[in-house]
Image 1 (cartoon, rainbow, N blue to C red):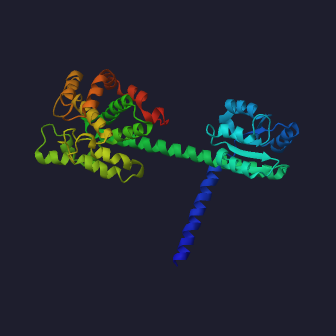
Image 2 (image 1 turned 90 degrees about the vertical axis):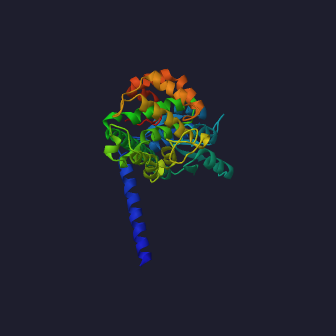
Image 3 (image 1 turned 180 degrees about the vertical axis):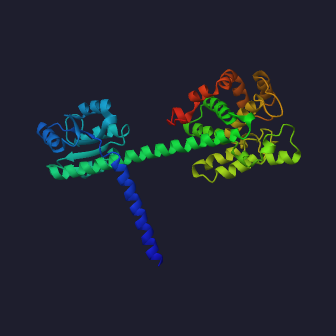
Length: 377
C-alpha cells in the first residue's frame, strides 16, 4: 500500500513539474530568439545559417574576436551560440570562456572536427557547454539540439523571472506588514520605515556588505512585529505603563523572534529582532546581553529606534527636537548604545535629520531592496 502511495505522489509531482515547465515555455513561445554562429570557414557559416534561419534571428562572426564584439553589443539579446572550435587567433573554448562569467545564461554549443577528450572536458568544466557536436554535423540533429537548448534557455530565464516576482511579492508583503503594525497606534505612523532608513544610513557609513544591508532593511521593517500580540490599550495608553503592563510590552522582541524564525528566509534576522532592546552595558532585555555579544545589526537598529521614538510625538508626550535627541544619544553612548555606532550616528546627524524630514524621498535613495534588487514598493 505504501509503495502505491509513493508512486502516486511521484506521479503527482512529475505531473506538477511538467505542467510548470509547459507554462514557462508557453510564455516564451511567441518570442523569436537570436542565435550567434561563429565559424572561420565561410561555407560552414552559410550552412549553419541556412539550417537555422527562419525560426531564429541569426548573427554571424568569422572568428572569436569578432564574436566578442558582437556579444559586447548584443549579449542581452542572444539566447544561444554555436561556435566552431578550431579558429585562428582564438579557439572556440577560449571565446566561450571569455563570455561565460558575463553571460552565464546563454546556451553554448561547440562544433569540432576532432573527438578530443581534453577539449571536451575543458568545454564542459570551464565554458558550461550545453552540447558538444562533431563535424560534419547532421543538420536535423543540430536543429534538434538547438531547439532543446532554446527550451532550456526559456525555462532557466522564466524561472529566474518567476523567482524575482516571488521575491518582490515577499518584500512587498513585509513592507505591508510593517505599515499595518504602525497603523495599530496612530502615533507610530511611519515609525518602522524611518527606523529602517536611519539603520540603512548607518550601515552604509559602516561599509557593510550587500547581504547584511538586505538583512538590516528587512529587520528594520519588521523590528516591532512582536507588538502584533500586545493589547491595543497598552500600546496606546496615554499615561505611564504599570509594571505589569511594561512586562507585557517587553515581551515583543521575543514574540517577534518566534513569529519570524518560522519563515526560512527570515530565520537569520529573528535573533536581531529579539535583541534590539539589549543595551551595551548589559542592562537591556530580554537576555541582558552586553557589548559585542549583541549582534551589530541589533545595535544599529537600537539607536535608530530610540532616535525615532524620541523625535516622534507619542500618546504620553510630545516629540523632542533633533538636537535634544542627538544630545541624549551622545549622553548614553557606552551605556545604552555601542559608543562607536553612537559616534557615527552623531557624525551623520545632518543626513539623519534630512531623512527624518523627508523619509519617503530618502528611503528611495537608501533602500537596498529597491536600488540593488529592483523591488518596486
